[in-house]
Length: 254
Image (cartoon, rainbow, N blue to C red):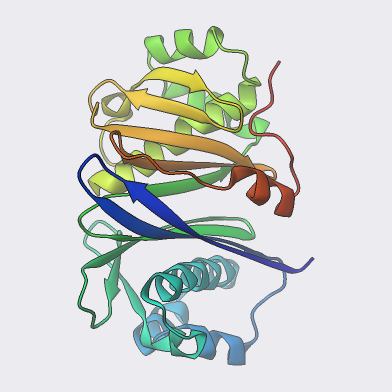
């Protein structure tokens, strides 16, 4: 299938409050036609798009389309209004929604190859998402950025090694998006100190950011991680995502 779009409203349940968020996953392998690009991008985004090299144009539109689907679903907007939504880059390259609205709204975006994911969420409840391909070619690079305790954590789990390393990386990346630092901060600051294997996912915690937790799960050949405030309870329909994107298990176990 050339395109696949998945939308899910998430209930973010706090001890004293309840929020909502909108999750979108989108995959597309075929190039975008000019008319399609015009129907998706804001005029300011179009100006940026036209400066990109050809190989980056697909991923840019892929990510923006996914983000705008999440924003539209969250705000109960109609799809023809997508070009009116401007997702600008902040000073640290973080996405910033430029849209007249009554509720402060934010977006977190990730894309890799021909797949993208995004979450639209209220400013009052920080959220981050990251998605990366599980690829043996990345093992050495990821290992070089791990702390000694993280090496020990991985050694004592039953997780398939490449998937586990990618899970660590995407967890840190999604946390960095909440903090709006990207990976410009030394990676040991994001050290992971706990790994809890669940039936459909893995939950990780952090040494220096105990107020956050991350849920990681497989999406086809990719690992997806969602970081959120630790005291928030929420559920993602992981089995349905894995069914649609071609995999029926969360993380391989050795």
